[in-house]
Length: 235
Image (cartoon, rainbow, N blue to C red; front, side):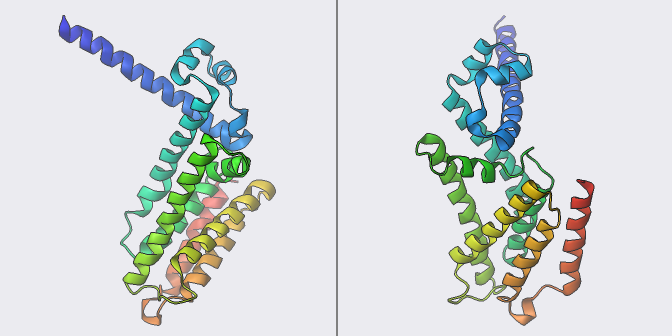
């Protein structure tokens, strides 16, 4: 009898978790295209064919829903971009992998509206409160990840250090190129923007790479070729 009750409870928990994922999968895509502020418990309930009371029980308030949506998007981003890049060796290969993974993520439109965080940070950057604070913290973590990757590349001797090679500055420049490519792609359907961003990042980092450590030209051409094939497949 006890075992049967435990199985019943486990089944309910599993169904609840599955329903929550279904809600948040829809929410992250809507928020990336229409904004976090456009999310509503009633609107999601209508789209999913659920009762408002059932959805309200999962989140409680609109702000709770928005925060849960941000966390869900963060996990998708980590799984799609960061974990994939961490498979590469430390140093310049991992930094290249982070850059390539981010551009691939934006070009494949993992979220319907392009980069979730580009859209939502632009929406909330001038609105103080818990939503802005959480977005700011996550973006700080991401920039920090790029900064650490640059520093590890320098420690490995793959990139030189110096006044023109400050890790924080390089992370800022790389992320700025990411945002520019996402903007051009979303606003103008400019598929070539990702190749331009890759080329600009390669040019900046190659200028800081000791000659003996520079990646072979055919490797860079192969990376560009792969990116073009990915972008072509999204047309």
